[in-house]
Image (cartoon, rainbow, N blue to C red):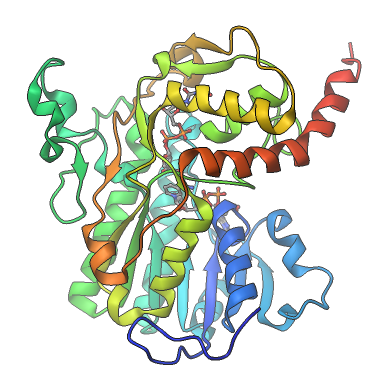
Length: 388
Ligand SMILES: NC(=O)c1ccc[n+]([C@@H]2O[C@H](COP(=O)([O-])OP(=O)(O)OC[C@H]3O[C@@H](n4cnc5c(N)ncnc54)[C@H](O)[C@@H]3O)[C@@H](O)[C@H]2O)c1
Ligand SMILES: O=c1ccn([C@@H]2O[C@H](COP(=O)(O)OP(=O)(O)O[C@H]3OC[C@](O)(CO)[C@H]3O)[C@@H](O)[C@H]2O)c(=O)[nH]1
């Protein structure tokens, strides 16, 4: 239930504000909209080209929060209404982006435009109108770890100094230009630098969020069900799709890359703390991830296979995974981040935030959702005769 008497971290009453949320119809946006409507008195101006993932919040128009969320179907690439919405709001949260790795090397121009050029007016309008901005960047701005350049058997690889990713100390290490995978990370890095410069030179009040593999329900799409059959979503949806279809999970280059996964609901708590505590969040870049949930992609596949068997009651395949080369899976120009462990010092100090949910638990609730939402539709799709 929304409460009028919520307090910030310094014990002051939080005043309801109007938030212009761009990209509100996506995975993170849908969870943030849910949180803001259910637990706060803030008003949301939800901007996106799609609204399927937030339709349950918009309809019927008789929800207790209905007068606090408005959907605006706007493509921020070319819509003059954007400035008016930013002016109307106290805070803008910008989530809009192309952010699936399969696009970075195959649609590099769209990726760079989406993550840099299209974000420019948002930053400009916030700066010119003295409005606060929370901008979503990515853990990919760190690129590869320093440790990955050490010899394979070097004991230094065990030293956190060579792999822990720190907002104010780690370098950003990308591959060469023909490795177009880095088009996204590079565009995100440049928009971060621009926002930082707007803060330094023009006083823009900003917060930059670097999400480390947030996962949970409503992430991306299941190919052929609620997205294109040939589409390649992020790993959670790829592996969910394989499990739902009883196919082996594809391990790109053997699945040796490492990631830390954080449950979307834990991560959204961190974003709400940023929204409600401007004095503690402004001017900061925050890693938001769960350093305790590290796994190789192969280990993730094995755990998802085990959890899915539990929640679906269906036996696992005898050979649950298959190796595939990155060239075959993503095409020319793909490259990968080797390891991503967020340093948590800054977010702990400023906001006292820590994630709670283990990898097993977050996969259990997410795969329960995937099974409930998609299993029937997949069965029907498989049963349908293919048109000749
Ligand atoms: N999910 C993660 O773990 C993660 C990790 C790192 C960074 N991020 C960043 O967080 C943000 C949100 O990610 P997500 O996982 O929710 O992705 P998402 O693709 O689910 O959401 C992005 C939303 O932005 C909208 N959008 C894109 N271009 C637009 C435009 N021109 N006009 C209007 N709307 C537009 C899309 O329709 C989509 O609904 C992105 O900036 C992404 O780079 C997410
Ligand atoms: O079927 C598959 C799909 C992927 N992989 C490998 O899994 C690793 C993670 O892939 P994914 O979650 O798709 O994306 P990344 O973690 O590499 O990048 C994202 O991180 C943050 C963000 O900025 C936004 O979400 C995005 O760039 C990777 O190693 C794939 O190769 C697989 O083996 N099989």
